[in-house]
Every structure is written in structure tokens, then in C-alpha cells.
Image (tube, rainbow, N blue to C red; front, side, top):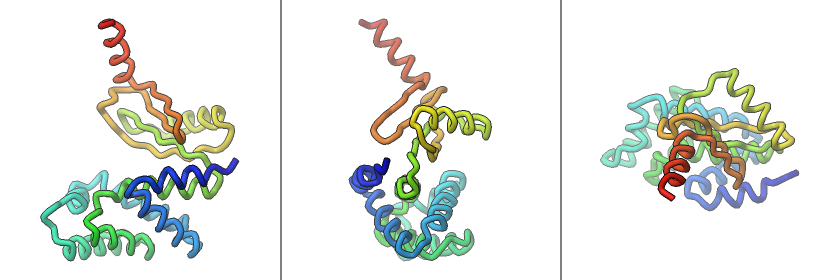
Length: 188
């Protein structure tokens, strides 16, 4: 089942998706999809974990030139591949460094579709342990019928449980949703 056409069309609808699609096509032509995906994942993780890097990507008073120099230094220090480094430079040039994590997620979805995998975007209140990831992966594989690449995101506002999005399908077992449903039922 190749749903990469639908995946690609959905991804291209967003700004970060257009950057990711352009990067994916370059990476595919250069046979470097895995290297770019690894680099983007590292950068997105670093942005999430480093206050300084997050500030670099969101600082509105930083000039384009300074942002470009800073992100080039980060890319060199992290030993990122050339395509990812160039893309981060373009993002800096266009004042879109804040889209870095979104570009990484979109690129991973395109890469997974290219490999014939299904991608699930999983949001949890806390980071999932390796055992929880293994169980989740097995459950999703049983539900979907094929291997599932899992992209995780932490959002404490859901309180507990998980939300899982596979394509246009949403599975929401979050405590926040359950409480809202209960509150609405009590009002009615």
C-alpha cells in the first residue's frame, strides 16, 4: 500500500512541509535521505532541549546574517550533513528557523512513506520509556497491519494518556479529552 502521494500532498499544504518536500527531493536525488533525516532529528531534539538554541530559532531581533552565521556554527558543531546545513541556512535567510522542528517532522513523514512505512504522530504528557515505545509500536503495527514509524511529542496539557494521529485518523485517549467529554455530559 503506497500512500506516499497522499502524504506528500498533505505535507506540501504547510509552509514547513514545502521546505521539507524540497529538501526530501534533493536528499532522494543525492541518496542521502537517511543522513538528512538523522541530522534533522538531531537538530529538532537540540532545539527542544536547549534554551539557547530555541532562542536562536525564535529571536525576532536577530538579523538574518547573524542567525545564518549562528545556525552554520551549530550545524558544524553538530556535524550535520551538507543538505541539512544548507536548508537551515535558507530557513535563517527567510526568517523561518522557528519551523525547524516542523520541517524535521514533515521530512520524517516523507522518508517513512518513501520506505513504505506508516507514520504515527504520538503526543503524550511525559516522555515515553523504551518499554512503552516497544508496546505502542507493537499495538500500532497490529492495528495498521504494517510497520509504523513513531514520532513523539510531549505536551503536558493533555494531563495523561496519548493522542495518536496516523494520516487523517486520530486516536485520542488523553485525560484532558475525557474530562472535557465528562464536563459536557454533565452540562447537558
